[in-house]
Image (cartoon, rainbow, N blue to C red; front, side, top):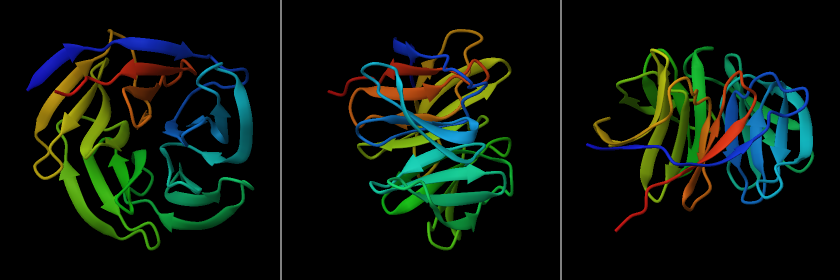
Amino acid sequence: MKRSATEIVTEYGPFPGVEAVHGVSYDGKHVWFASGDKLNAFDPASGKIARSIDVAAHAGTAFDGRHLFQIAEDRIQKIDAASGEVLSTIPAPGGGGDSGLAWAEGSLWVGQYRERKIHQVDPDTGKVLRTIESKRFVTGVTWVDGELWHGTWEGEESDVRRIDPDTGKVLEQLDLPAGTVVSGLESDGGDRFFCGGGDRGNVRAIRRPRRG
C-alpha cells in the first residue's frame, strides 16, 4: 500500500450559519455541501456561497449531471438541481446509518458509516446491487478515473483512501493532520478532492496524487 501525508490545497469557510458539513459534491462549477437543513453551493474560485436549497441534508450528497441526490435520515432524495424540487425518494441502505454518497456508472454508491461498508444502489428503486467491505468507518465516497476512494474518521484520525472495488483492499492512503475530520468526499475530476470538515463547518480541497 502506498501511504503519504495529505497536501491541503485550499480551505473554504467556515460559512455563515453553517454549524457542520455533512456531505460534499461537485457539479463542474460549484461545490455543494449538506448542512442539516440546507444544500449549499459555493464557487471554489472565490469561496463564496452562490446558492442554497431548503431541503433536509443530513449526510452524503451526489450529482449525476442533472440531479442532486441527498441523504436525509433513512432516505435518499432526488432533487432537481435547477428548481430545488424533491422529485422522488428511495430508502437508504443503512436505514439511517448512512454517510457518504457518490454517483458513478449509473448507480449511487452509499457509505454505511459504522458498518464500514459501501453499497452500490439502484437510483430508481434503492435496491442494493453489491456491497464492498472497508477496514474503517466510511465518511465519504467518490469515484474518479475508475478509482474508488473513501474518507474515514475513527479513533480521532482521518484519512482518504483508495480501495480495490472488488476486494476492499486498501491500495493507497492519504493521511490528514491530527484532529482533522473528513465528512463527505468528492473529486473534481482532476487533481483535487473536496472534503467536508465536519463540525468545523468548512470544506478543504486536498491534492489527489498524480498518476504515471
